[in-house]
Length: 223
Image (cartoon, rainbow, N blue to C red; front, side):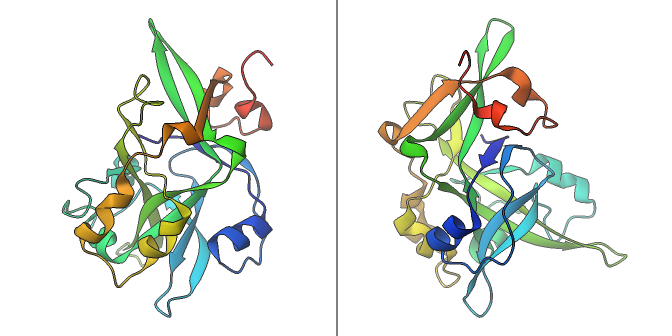
């Protein structure tokens, strides 16, 4: 799964990597948690790409209560195309969620120890995401998103059986293309990201609290 992640990418890097115009600074975040606003890249009806900030925890357009989003921070890539909560978004509202890395917790006896996972050479990455548009009876609008997951690679498997879907940059255009929605055309990109391109190390348990959002969160434990 993916319950916490980081983003330390300049607006210039986001513009270059994802092909979007950036008119605002992107603040670094070292402990992004569910219900917070997260940066997403999505395609508008005119087929231009834009960066927006959405609520993390997808609220389906048909939901009666927005609190359902608390249970929708992740969606299984194998079934999202057919599940009621994610089906429409999968076919019409796909997005990229930029990140620098993410956290997972290993279990040592009764204590959970946080680990930080990122690409080697600290290369920025993008999760495969879905988004939706919810409107309350009073007219309040919430745009929200979820991160797709797949089976873990060999690096993550000893820690957790699921990991976020990390897309290869060559597949960004395919994932954002609103004219392609057949699962047969997309499922190959859900393969676990190669272990040999990733690194993982233990970090301080200060990341257990989302109130802590500093560089100290990703500092290797003991250094």
